[in-house]
Length: 440
Image (cartoon, rainbow, N blue to C red; front, top):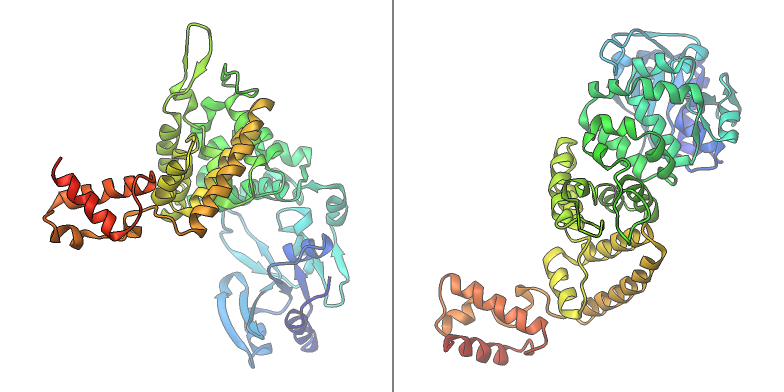
């Protein structure tokens, strides 16, 4: 993969001034995998003050000098340049107590988390690989550098990073590393909710989240213990062939890779065990599980510090994921209630739910396709779906004698009649209809 000019300039500028300089970490991994890197981090034997001197003609941001990191802006692009370093003990399971700078590239690489992230590359594309990172990429393996237990005790967030990388790339976690993930999982309690949230979301949005959710559910249960009742919870339903947790795994893997949809599928049935009732024939029922799952999800997402907007959208999708939406009126109503974007996402949620049930439930996909077509028609035709779409407003109703709370009540009744096609969205017809309501 071609290295961008701004990044190559930075490495060559350091070399020109007598220092070693390499690209390191994820950008090297991505280049080997032919994935366009998001950024190009650079590691060097130059000390922070020397880095600033080398780039005195550029904008320099002292991002984290005590940890050896300086950010340099070249051609509008930010590059993090970090001095080779050796980390001391991590008493908080997240950050080193102190950092020592080193003159040796090998010292810097061996402190990194996984072999696939512990390679360096010069400006000509020559790679330094001391721990078998390329072989592990070729074999589809996530392996800790050195002893996995030590790496996870240093920084427990690496446990979630291992899961995220495996889910993202469809890799397996090497057995000793996997064993340490399970053994050290409780260290995640020392990590901030925001950090856990970001890694967890990355896991869900990976190309292969299913095997990770299946094999490492005990790890996820450390920060979302509410999933534990779902494990092996049989549904006793003719519509389902999986227990609640396995259905959840299939649903996450079956849906479109959009963050809020993946999150919604993970949580959509989380309250099913709480709602389970079995009839005299042994058939399972989960009345009210959608709303109860939505409420439980709202609490979890707040605890994990998701944004208010993301939480609101996910809770909305879960609340309505069992809605049938049998006619155009119901489609208009739901568009007005949750917005067109959320309706399209809701249809994707329902598709994924259907794909994760018995084969005959896939017939529901045709219904979802028809509903999507109708929703697009409603939007393209500018059909009335909310009060503000009416060709009448509260002032018009005041002129014909309505006041106070009854104005909103009448507007809602008018909207309902328009959406049911009982009357047209025409000012004159709406006023006549409103007048008729005063005589009832």
